[in-house]
Picture 1 (tube, one colour):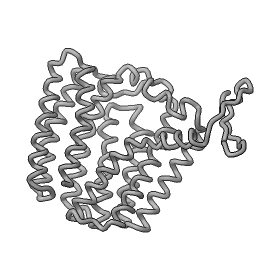
Picture 2 (cartoon, helix red, strand yellow):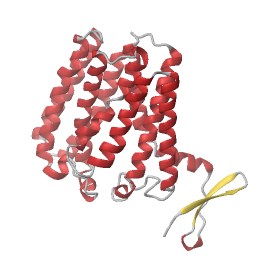
Picture 3 (tube, one colour):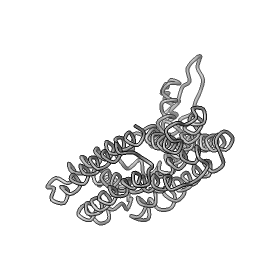
Picture 4 (tube, rainbow, N blue to C red):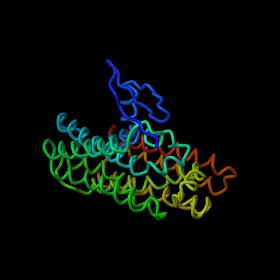
Length: 310
């Protein structure tokens, strides 16, 4: 059995690989970098971005600074905790995928106990911070998101059904609700429209990624849409959800949550994404098209978030 244990040597911690008695030095910086890695900084940042959108729009573009900072800190801690728990639960399948096999857990640079403990601690601190310094409703929104991501998505559906992508989108749509309720204390129409926008954006984004990595997901026996049914049905679903997203995004303007600048931006960005999606129906290189769709989905979300707050 191979494992690592930490020992202290002067001002430097060491990770010792006891297989064959060999010692592999690791600096504190390396351990900290791995601990940060399991919290998935990219996902944390994108969730923080949408939490801020909820804060900004709910407060009428004039949020209280301290309350906004506490909300962002608390929600980010919960997201980081959930991501660490996800890393722990997926450590076996991460070993089977090129994209994930170099993560700290499958690469045995961190122990499972340290990662799950970190996740639980971060999630607890985040919920506690929201309860004490923001409000109970925001804390409940964060807990619902955590529950759906860790238990419903990672634990129950990811390895069993193609619907996991849609089900998991609930957790990814919670950040704007956390931000909105932090400022207003209520779940009004604007909050639910932001939730719906984020819920619909995620499936085409993730299906494009899963098309790019279909062989890896198949090797890990994860029943995603392109793995189980192939590229053609997946492309049709991507087109359908992308087309649906555009009118839904316009409802934020109709409900007077956003302004004319947002309306123009939503039409332009949405129109470009629909055109790109439709091209996929006749694409000769499905992987190249999926890569383009995945990258543009990130540009779309960032652009839409910017349009919401400008």
